[in-house]
Image 1 (spheres, rainbow, N blue to C red):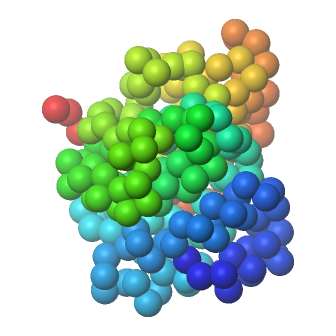
Image 2: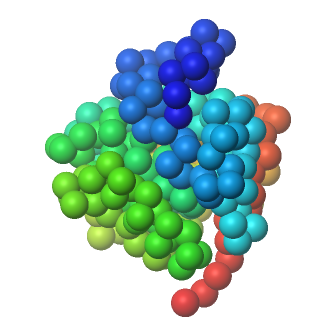
Length: 208
């Protein structure tokens, strides 16, 4: 993604924190869309990535990242990673001392994520790991997580994800087209905020 879109996101208040701004500048959205849509990668619209799925519009992703506030060294669970854009952005932010676990249910998109993320050597560096898995189950092997990002709509916040979030950790998840922010303040104490007016593809229900 070129600097012009990043500048617009910053100017309009969607991107605010230095780490997020750097990641959006370093990681081009064009590397995560099908070749026929590369010329539209700078447009602030969702774009199809195949198999009935989309890559979210940049303003939405920027808002999610500002709420999530990922930091260097964080361990982050990225659910519904699609073509890998959010996974690469997170990999850029958490750096060599952090870890991103990227989960995708559709085999074709799982392979796409791996190819796209490795354009930035995040797989070979061990920063991002990709798994073909049911995102609603989370990834207990690497929990608890500092941050959990869900990029597809859920009916409710899964209890499994609440349990896998570290105390002090943050989760951003779309629920009924509300963008929901959750902060875990104690083992059973959650602060929640909801932001209406968003539209996401639903989490895919697929068994293996």
